Image (cartoon, rainbow, N blue to C red; front, side):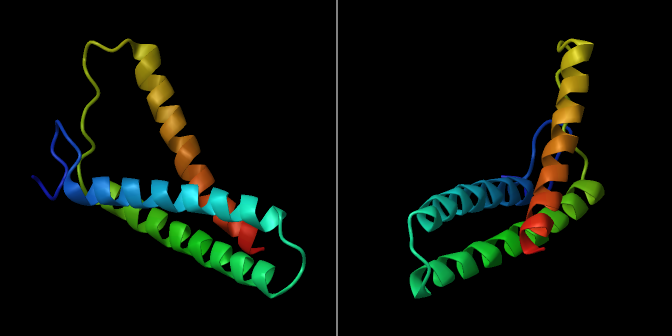
Length: 109
C-alpha cells in the first residue's frame, strides 16, 4: 500500500487522517450526548474536559491533513463524472474542511 497519494488513489497517511478524524468526531458526538444527561459536578467536568481536548486534537489533525493534502497530489475524479459533480465535490470538501477548522475554535471560545 502506498504511503503517499497517487493520481488514482489516496495513500495510507491521508486515509489515516480521514478515519482518525471520523472516529474522533463520532466520539465528540457521544460525549456531547452523555454530557447532556449529567448534572453539574465532577463527572460532567471530566467529560467536558475530554470533549475540549478531543476538539483541539481534531483541529490539529485537520491542519496536518491540509498540509499533507497540499504537498501530495489529490486523486483525480473520474472523467466520466458530470461537471456538476466535480463542482459539488469541491464545494463539499471546502465546506467540510471549513467546519473541521471552525467548530473546534468556536467550542474552544
